[in-house]
Amino acid sequence: MIRQYELVDRVKAYDSGVNEDALNRAYVFSMMAHGSQKRASGDPYFSHPLEVAGILTELKLDSDTIVTGLLHDTVEDTVATIDEIQEQFGDSVAHLVDGVTKLSKFELQSADKRQVENFRKLLMATSRDIRVLLVKLADRLHNMRTLHFIKGADKRARIARETMEIYTPLAERIGMHGIKDELEDLSFAELYPDARSTILARLDFLRSEAVENEVVDEISAELKELLKEHSIPVQLSGREKRPYSIWRKMQRQNVEFAQLSDIVAFRLVVDDIPQCYQALGAIHGRYSCVPGRFKDYISTPKRNGYQSIHTGVIGPKQRRIEVQIRTSEMHQVAELGVAAHWQYKQENTSGRRRFAGISMGA
Ligand code: MN
Image (cartoon, rainbow, N blue to C red):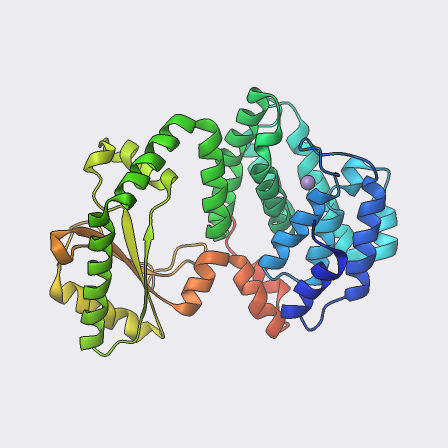
């Protein structure tokens, strides 16, 4: 479990305006309120809000949000009341905890009452303050990470389906790709364990083939060399696609795993936008572009703010490869979505309204 001072130190590390006193009081308040309650894992219940708060510190969110992470289940699951929270932690935290509690109550309703569409609407309505959604996503992420502790297979499947139907699209919509990817893979593991382990085994096999690794290294080296010739400073990474996205692609294109050649995607991170296009020019100048694979989300960002250039080329070694090109700022936004904007907000305090303006409509 994360210790009290560790949690405070983590927030301090990125937020000079940290409210240490509130964090310390929330830690104790939540621990006392949950008392001897236990999780399905046998851990003290308090470990859950604490982990949720921990996830929120990774997103570098403000003190009120971290405090809300600690308190998010106290009104729903303990004798604590929203008035008490309002008195001890102020209006902003009370408002956030209330929002998260409303969403949790809705989740508990029976499946037919709780139609997916209604729930989405509720999520959007509650999200006038986007931090409510961020806490809810962190909550769901920790619950999914610990899903295997839940005994009933039906219950696990229901939770995993709900995650796929509601929370991964939500994470996508607000641009939280890191969380979206993890939620997707955790749900995939629960719902299609056989498909997933087949894919993992195949990936293991390919990785163990020295040839495959060599190919990836050679492609990386050639791309680096090409960009160097054009004097474009770049950070290049090759990353293996995730089992879930491989599976989706197999479904979509109706292909066997053995036919899937481009299991590695290359990402180029450069300093600024002109360099993105220079890098693209260098790549398209050398290799032929695969028709239909070129997308420019820099000139036309996705609605969630995502920006990148995507292209597919017949690359080095006649291998079909996928390449993403972006600046480091775009990379931040791609991983953290609205949470990345929240960090900028901490630097220039005009913040909250900007979120209100983010496009959340259907
Ligand atoms: Mn919770």
